[in-house]
Every structure is written in C-alpha cells, then in structure tokens.
Picture (cartoon, rainbow, N blue to C red):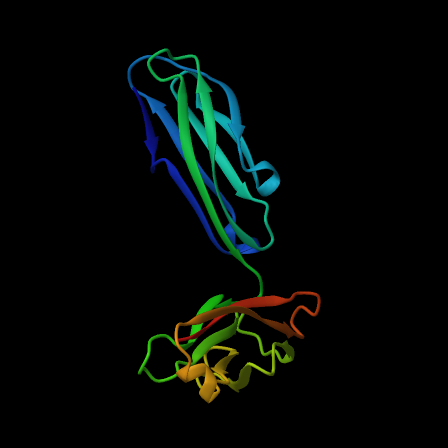
Length: 206
C-alpha cells in the first residue's frame, strides 16, 4: 500500500511570506504506482505540484500557500493507477496573518446571567514583525460601548490592549428575559492603512 510521510495533513500558519513550501511524500514499498491526476477544492488559495523522486515508487507533493491573509480548509486529492489505492486524500489548512493581528476576533460582554456583574472584554492588537505602529482609528457604537486602549507593557511585543466595556443602563439590568446584540469594532492602523481589522462583539443583557 501507499504510505504518506510525514502524514496526510498540511498546516500553514503565520504570515504569508513566512509560510514557505511544505511537502508530503507518497511511497509504495510493494506495487509500483503512478500519480495520474491532482485535484483540489481550494482554488487559488494554494499552488501545488507533484515531483517524481523515484518513478513508480516515490512521489513528492509540494504545496505552497497563496493567500495573503485569511483562513481556509480543504483538500488535495491525488489519483493513482493502483487499484488497491485509487485516491490519496491530503487535508490542507491555512491560518495566515498579516503584519497586524487582532486576538480574539470575537468576544461576549454584558450581563451574561441575572445577578452577575457586568462583564467587559479585552482584545490585543499586535505586530507580527514586532515593529512599532499606531492605531489611527477605532469605529464602534459609542452609545453602547466604551472603548479604551493602552500600549502593551511588554517591551518585547509591539501592540495595544483594548478594553471594551458595555454601557449597561438600569433598564438593561432589570428587565425580564435577555437580549443579545451583535456589534462591530473596526480597528485601523498606520502599519497598513488600507486594512480594516474587525472584532465581532456580542452584547448580552440578562
């Protein structure tokens, strides 16, 4: 049968120019085989090719990330002329970040249950290159949220901590039942002025 080394999964993580190429070797120690076709559901998110290391016995599948920023998950399928193993499925996952990254990208704030204190949230805005930058703009619903920022105290990490606090009125905290609103915080920096980083905020009142 055909063995895969180091396995059947490829994972790209980090910045696009740091991801490089990754490969998987397909080896048969019994019957000879050939790769007849390659297909993928990832479109232009990746580039891939197959190389014959030892024709009929060992092939190398080489994969390169093509995405500048974003997350994807899919497969590459190698078709063979071996009846016992007509298809070889390779899983490919990518989590590609730009120079500036925001973590987490989703938070829940507010009064999550009756009698509990109001919960605030925090997100970090960090430079993957550890280069100084400025937050030039933050867009959000000022009627519902208070948003403040502070530079990170760690000298080894360039970035900011952003505190997000809900403006909870007495009516919000005493009415029966609960409500949930989806809000957006949009962050812009001078590191990439065209890039808008979005944080999804779920405001809960119980």
